[in-house]
Image 1 (cartoon, rainbow, N blue to C red):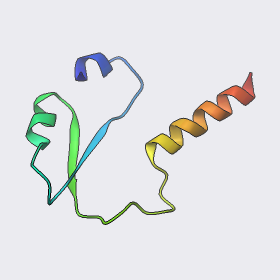
Image 2: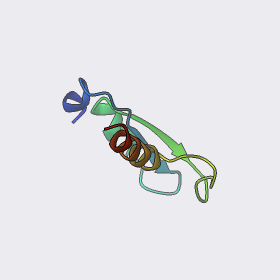
Image 3: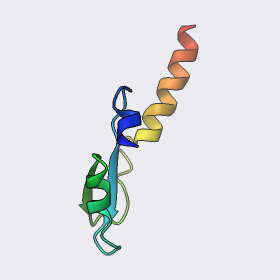
Length: 64
């Protein structure tokens, strides 16, 4: 999976809750990044990656 993403202009971060099964070693073995977190929910003002991808798609259509 990481090899397929190597040449693409993407950034992937895997987030694992601290009270879930520890799957980060598997993620690291595949050459990907990951973190543990204990947040209840994301910050409402913090742009999530899918929000940024959606905005990029919308703005690219306006440029055409």
